[in-house]
Length: 388
Image (cartoon, rainbow, N blue to C red; front, side):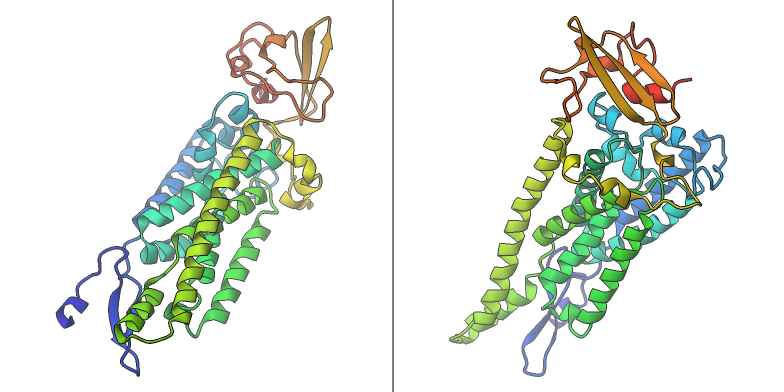
């Protein structure tokens, strides 16, 4: 055992670290792994930002336009920013992922990459690449889905949803493993640190181009995913093994801790599946979840004299209205700059179940994106708001 102790432990295999005062084995987490995934994500995000500046003619927009000091909204939209109309009506589902690697500006990028490395690298060293990659990607996708539902008229970018998922996973690690020696003596400081980081990052979501709905949506997914994947059962298994070897009459404490971790993990996994299904069904079936929270948009950005909270919505439509006459449906799209685009005879592109005047917006068939005639070469509905 002495010689083996100095050899690196394989992933998810726990090694005996030392014996306590009573001679019982004390189990430590695996030897740290290299955070390849987090390093790759930092590199990808930085590369994507440089590419966005290149497409913006190698210039940063002034603070009055983009307080994060980055490219224009039009540039971000062209390369994959989250735009609900393009995602739902034009089947550009890839934007749910690509929006995670784009950033509104230098400030946004620096804070996110610092948070990604500070939080994600630590988790990856302890729990491995696969677990962190799953949490990161699921959190990012669910965060963007939540943003599409609650902020359909906002164009947003950023890895914040995925990073908030890692914050949620850290909370999950603490909740599932607070009894272990890893947190012994620093439970209070860990709780305070997690709380500060979460609140600070939420506050960062009160400026344009940063999306608090993606934050919260990603956090919930990361928490549930972390509860399912990050339970550290080594010490409880060691305890039960010792009880069995010594034929002790009671293993209540060991069994209770282990059972709690398993039950919490299973419940969290079921809730995660339900959460993802509800989000994506609500998004693509066009259920009006936003009606449940009419004041939610005000939480996403704090109006000040320093910036315009509608700066991140310049490529989306503030209003779409439709009217039916003699069985022919016509419509108009009002842009945030006041321009109105009139759509003639879009009957063939309106999906079944559309009720003119209903509180739930009608959906359009993706064929409207390639249609000529009434739409000409203008493209999708949100394209109409940026056309010359």
